[in-house]
Length: 316
Image 1 (spheres, helix red, strand yellow):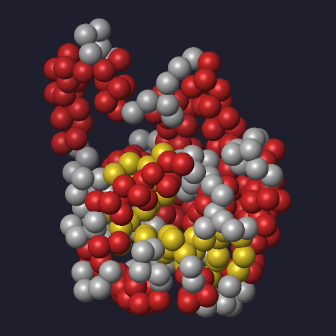
Image 2: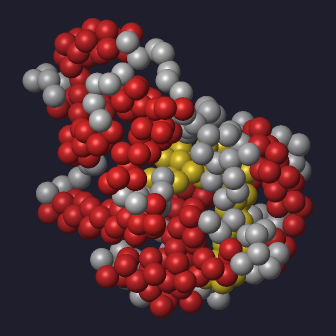
């Protein structure tokens, strides 16, 4: 029998993580406190698994094989029974996570990892008083993790290093790309990198510098082209004849001057969000959002296939 992993919360992230773990060979149980959500997740998972199989992104498995190991259950206790890993995917609300982890610590097997998909709340905020706090950590994905493999492992000060390493090894064996933060920080790495970009995107539109469409194009057809396979430090290292030190000497003053103009935040509300929403709905009607989300995932699948080919034929 395959080992069991429990998903607590069966929305977008819970469904995506279920595919990742099942693709990795685990049995996955789905629980959601809202009636019908876990059950309704199953056909959505099957649809995505079929797309992944078509692109060869199921680790050699079939969609039928992956979906056969995922089941919906009616209680947290049933979900975590016999589980080696529990992944909480609840809303980004401290009190909800505190209550959930109190229950998970009580009912989950004593040796099970208790992980949260929290996007910014650090684990120490909701695990300090737990008897099993040594096994608690953040495992934060970038959506959707079945094609964007990065996962942030963020331990609390009291998380046992052995539990962290066991989790990292497990995720790597599944084909994910985990990174481990050396200490807690609000927002972790991914959102702290993304946050300034989002604020600047809203700021540029609010200042009348560009339309939302052209800001999107600057990213999708510009910066992201190289960021899809190398990161900011390597970009700098390769963008000066003699590497990163010369890059810093050349461009730090310019970037500091730009940063001085980026201190004031604009609210993502009022006339600004009205304008951006109007532009977005003119391009993509609300009833087409789900269709476009699937298009996004299929484009990411194609990119994942290309990156794998490039690693094998061009080099890492």
